[in-house]
Image (cartoon, rainbow, N blue to C red):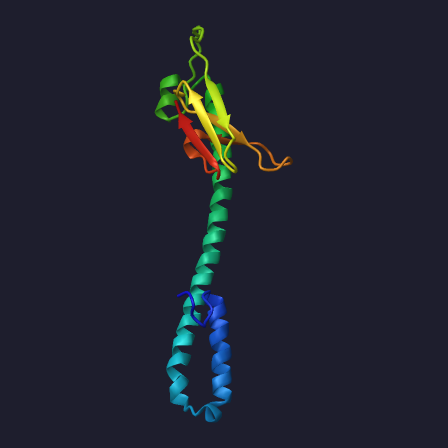
Length: 174
């Protein structure tokens, strides 16, 4: 709770109670206390520290498990790409078999693309401080991709319109 005398974070609270109990135990007579007065706080503190340790270990394990998942995901995607390349290059595997495995089946016949009748127009309004309003005309049929670079040395990132998470960015469609 805000405005309380004790720290709000778990580790800081544990240190605070440890120091309080150490002082109270060392000065029982001077404070007019008996051991039974601080026994409930001591028992509660021990349970709190055990649960804090359990939570900290679980949090650390979650971080390690997430990191390992990303490593394994990267490896399986690499192997999947290699398998797809092998299947696409194979003369033994047919298109229906590729389709049955969920792999892409590429159309080998080329079809002419019609000349576009319209062209997209994108306007970015920067008149408001810390806000960029992006307007489209006509409305994009398949979405748009943006590139973002926070720092000059950072590699470009592609940001699909449906998954943007940039602050100070607002989209409008006309």
